[in-house]
Amino acid sequence: MNVTIFGCGRLGSLLAQMLDAEGHRVTVLDTDSEKFERLPATFKGEKLAGVGIDVDFLRRAGLTETDAFLALSGDDRPGGDNTNVMASQIAKQVFGIPLVISQMKDPLREDAYHTLGIETICPTTIGADLILTMIENKP
Image (cartoon, rainbow, N blue to C red; front, side, top):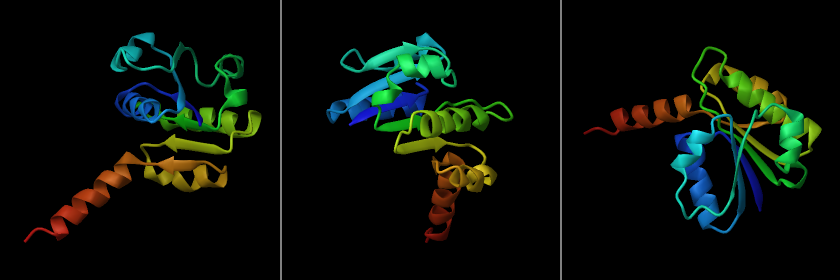
């Protein structure tokens, strides 16, 4: 499978390593080329620095041949989820990528993402669920 990951932070770089090790063709995009240092020397995929909401850059990055697009930018600023949703919308609507998954930090935005046909992963919700389970299962 051809997978493009936008964001080479902790999550994006780890997932890129895992997918690469399983034999998938992986392209990692990030605005900061220094983030590619998170990837091991054994990483066989492509690494491209550029803006993940720039259609021309995404076309040059090979989105016309991508099977899955993962928007994993770790922007923690207020409204930071907007970058991921914009990149996801472009991947879905402009390039017609069948599987688009977007990380979001604000769980209140989940319904809006789903309305756009974008699958989501929310570390905030996952973390809260796991902590609640740990508390409830404490003897």
